[in-house]
Length: 441
Image (cartoon, rainbow, N blue to C red):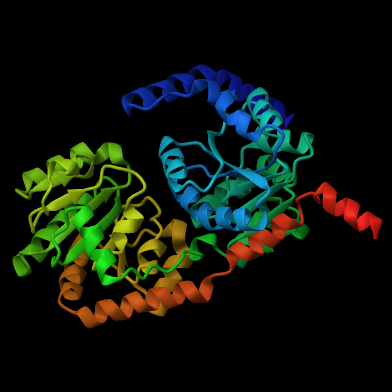
């Protein structure tokens, strides 16, 4: 009855889903890929997968895709005979996936219609499906169960904001969770919550957060100089990076930067909107303040270093992580406005001090660890952001101390990849040759 109701709602919503997806893709200049969204895989991709042993990893968008990287590397190392398929829902997630070169094939996950997800699964025929974080598509999970394909939820979390909603809908999500073969949750709190919603307790394990398993970046002075040259960043500038901003955060960040310029006219700002399509609007905000601005996509038009006191506006996807290493201070956005925050771990892996705002609900554990360890600082609002930027810009010792605490925290909390791979090993079928050898003994 529950599945019938869900599929009836999906059927009624079909015209709206298609229209919205078509408009969203066209307005952003991206291909609609509607055939793929309904389960038809391009022949070029199928040719690589046909007859191969496959592990499918699903990551909805950019954050989940980046979190999957340590796991994909671990799967590649542990199962070199398998093909890895990485599926996404969003175009930006797919762009990051393609750029990583960690999967053999990157596909869009179909809309959650039974015929579409069955088509994908029958064509790809994965031996194991890994869902990143709490990405629960009922028909996709149901189809996998019907086809006897084990499904592992990896890096699972239930945020404070979503827990109440999931509990109210436990009658719907409980049966979905009970079709999962194993659930690796980030914390004990997440494990308790997923069991309360309806998962079988015996299938739930605390594996830690995959996002902590980021390789520590220690580029040499020569490498940093080369990277700055590649992006037109003045060699001796104090570099402030404001990352993953949402609407309402760019203005206070620019105000903080202008106050910094009054103390250090040679400073430089890297500004990265969370959604690149906002770049034109953000560029207008910069221009209104009389600050020079260069889009990353037009950087080739500037063969020399960009002027000190100006802004490099990142309107591309997948480059922010490498720019953290040339930064002296990073503010992670999505946290001055109530969107739940973004991941501060990547700048910490570069030994860079991190600031974030009061809204870190989606990263509550990480934010608490950072604050308790002195690996980051939380600002209350835009004025507080400016105060901390000015203070830390003038205190190199404090910046180095915070950055080193961030590195130490990552080293201490790593290991989730290994624990998740162990869960996966218990679900993957034994290779035929191994079974034959064991039988012969």
